[in-house]
Image (cartoon, rainbow, N blue to C red; front, side, top):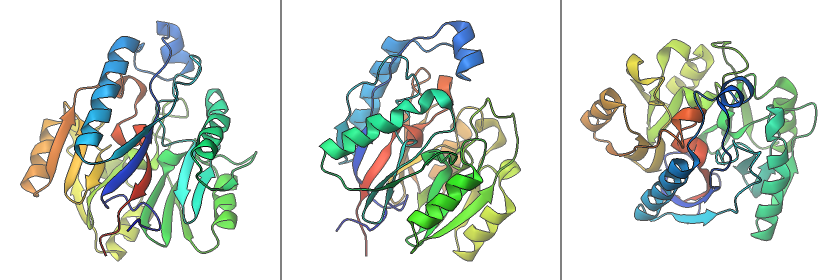
Length: 288
């Protein structure tokens, strides 16, 4: 049975992906898009296909959207322009101006797929999917960041009257040009187990996890910059994450978590977006 909301530890059964597009110059990549270096598109496309195969091997139905126009180089991070909520999807509103066109693309795509749209975040609100994390079926944590603002969070509360929308103020860290989402610092890997990057973890988030008896696995410090905290749970105790995070893999395996890694620097690392960023989790199966 499909869960009312896609709690991030439930078995993932259906996901939406969008392939990477666009190649940037060095100056465009760093100054305009906040990338670590230009993406090699051919490599990114091959890595995206490998990621799709890993999902399908985990019995996930993958809906592949058409490629966005080449100027929308962040569009492969499919989790950001929409959010699955009880009854359908909300169309969100990215704070990064170059991504605003993605909202019309995702709205058209989900409409063509026959999926219900429950509402839309409007100016001056901003919410990105990377800042949204379901803690339980009735509680949505939302990072208050440079990408998701107070107006957007208030709109979420209006659109989701039966849900507790828990605002989680985040830190400045490296500033507005670098993406720091809530999901940059926490990933569930099982029903009551989450990996957390403790140096940037808001106390409000830690209290919310404690109240739900969630076991915290502190991310090894050396793995944060290599996206070690961005982990996609495809079933309870079964995850996909970026390669190059040996300490985190060892920690997870010692905790009984089955880990699959993907070498995907041109897909993930260059744009600071890991497996959860690439994936709009449309459906997860209830285990109750």
